[in-house]
Image 1 (spheres, helix red, strand yellow):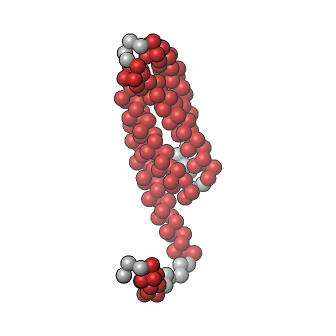
Image 2 (cartoon, rainbow, N blue to C red):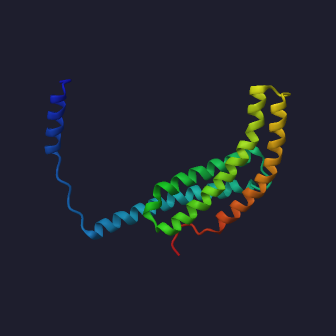
Image 3 (cartoon, rainbow, N blue to C red):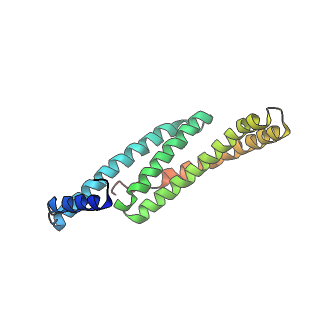
Length: 165
């Protein structure tokens, strides 16, 4: 029973016992595609609303709030990439690109925020490298704030590709 020959026998027998799939007509295929689009739109819309809700704290949020926004953006991006082929490519591409820029800006901010903690843990809190990284991080955080605001504005300007019209 553990031999490859027996495994092939079971698989061959199982394959002959399955009923042949029923042929689908064009109307049924179209309905299935529409159902998939509706499902995808519901998932993407839920993720987009979560991101919008989290982003209310974008302007005055600290490291933890911006990290939560980054995670919400990442989850929305995964959903849009997974379901993008169900929608018009051009609109999906524009939305995903704006979302990727936003996610990159949030990631740069997070990197700058985390770097001093990592440096302090590795080199010590008073090491020259830690002090230099803290200075870099403070400058980067200010620049990141402007970049995040611009990326958010560009992202908001792009039409949600899963919504009609």
